[in-house]
Length: 144
Ligand code: AMP
Image (cartoon, rainbow, N blue to C red):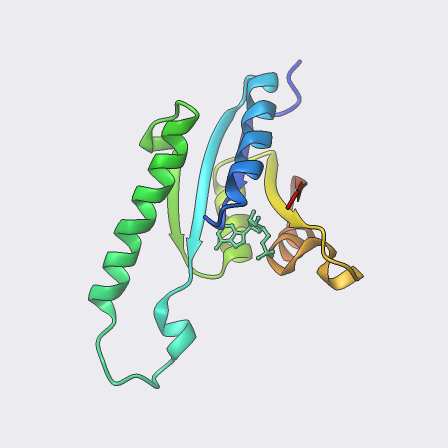
């Protein structure tokens, strides 16, 4: 019996993403599992609050479009179509958990930097993802 049926890989779209996606892809192949790629965009309003007296809707829409393109390109590199990619808006760990629960994900794959100290070992998003997850979480060690 295959252990995992639906694997979610959370990508921050930095140059580290290839290492994380490669591991998730290998696991998906080995388990014959579905693979979903997601990136979470934080709304611009979170960062700037009401401090900037301008409408950020258009900028947000451009950012969204650009992010979809990036994710689609990464998926294409491993032979996956756009339907495997999802750009979500909100706080990364919250959206990762929500997507996982709503889509019967049984393994979440995130990256982990080899920083020193307990707090920095996993990174803030990866440790927050691990804390609230209702399924397995794999932290892929990022090699510099
Ligand atoms: P960090 O906590 O920023 O060091 O990120 C660790 C890992 O969390 C990354 O390698 C990704 O797997 C995941 N991650 C961070 N930010 C995001 C994001 N905005 N969307 C999806 N995944 C993310």
